[in-house]
Amino acid sequence: MADPEQAPRVAEPEAPLRMSSEGAEKKLDEIVEEHARRISQLENASRRTLWLSLIPILSLIVAAISAGSAFLTYNSKIEDTLRSKRGELRQAIEKVVDFHFSMSKDREQNNINHTKQNVYLDAAESIAKDFPKQVSYQEYMVLGREMFLRGNYTKAETYLDKAVESAEKSKDDIAVNLSARDLAYLEFNTNINNIKKGRDNYQKAFDVFKDTKDDYLRCIFAITNELWGVSERSKGFEKEGKCKLNIASKIYSDLKEKGYPVAYIRSMTLNVPEDTIPTQENDVGKEDSQECGDKK
Image (cartoon, rainbow, N blue to C red; front, side, top):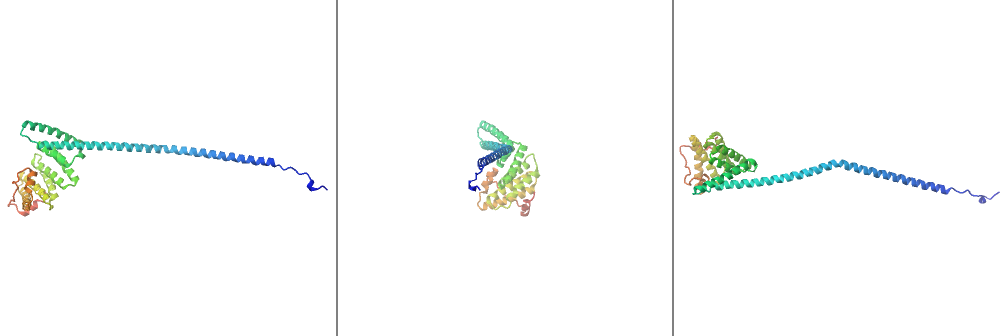
């Protein structure tokens, strides 16, 4: 019996198995690489798709930024224009006022000044027409008064109406009083002859300071009543006129007793001598005087 250890051995197929394993690994690597390549392609395609989808949005953002920049530039130019026109208007109004008080003994010089004033007045009117929101109540009052002095009462009324409107928006009580008072005087004392509108505006000026305790504002209040009284009398309303004049004279008297320079303030405001302050009229009772102050 043959020795088992001496029996011939069958060779093991190591090489084919090894080759088969290496081939499988190579195939697996190729598959992984292929998947990686496809994933990369998908990612690139996805990025391109994303950027393509963002292009309209980015375009809108760029357009919005450009529009915003253009709007700011446009607004800046508008503001510069308004500031420039505001300065031109102020200069024109100042010249109108300056020439108003630059009367000369030389007639020829007065004619020259008057011509210059008309040029500046026309310029002020033009700017006020084109840029009404840039005009203050004081400037409208200057235009209204100048038109009043020239006898153009329709224009004067238009400008003083705007002065009152501007003053009311400013919440400035003195502005409301002065502008309404000027308009009321115009309505009474010209051929416009709108008594109701005149009384309404005198009442507006009256109401602003009827309860004030301040001496200066009381003086302004007294001047308002004096002008109202004179206006009523000019139209034949004697009792109404006396009522307002009595209110004025009572306040003037009180302020004079306190040493307040009421005569000077009144003379500067009304351009009248200091010794023309009205006195109390005894034929109108105190009750009537107070009552007419709250009537329209």
